[in-house]
Length: 147
Image (cartoon, rainbow, N blue to C red; front, side, top):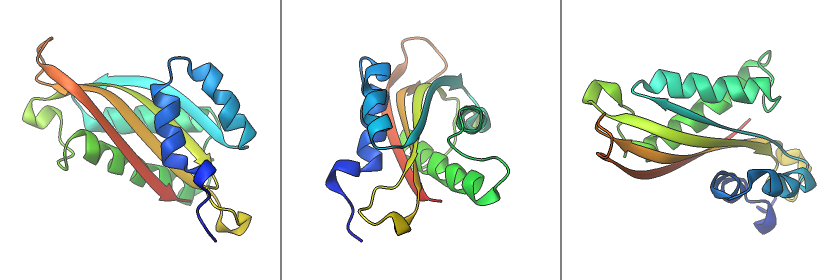
């Protein structure tokens, strides 16, 4: 039941996100037999960030939208990643902040034992700050949840 060092889903989500050539890194994901997607979102509304990530994950087959627990697990991973981005206060526009983010979503089993089942990881990287160009700084967040 040990977590496999080579299959750390959060580490792979961050590496995919920060890779200079995500298409090249996708080979690593395919070898693990995991599902993934990447994308970008910018908004002053955290609901739009959640919606963009959920839509990408559903369109790319990372989660099955007909199975509630999959959408629910993804939602919690997104919120956990947003907590990192917003330093624990999942507020953006209501406190006059905007984000420009790239994201990666991974789904797979990070354990040696297949019976442990799939997990989902969401990584976010980009900028956050006042809605004035040049008033932002870098930020990163990671969320992981079991399906």
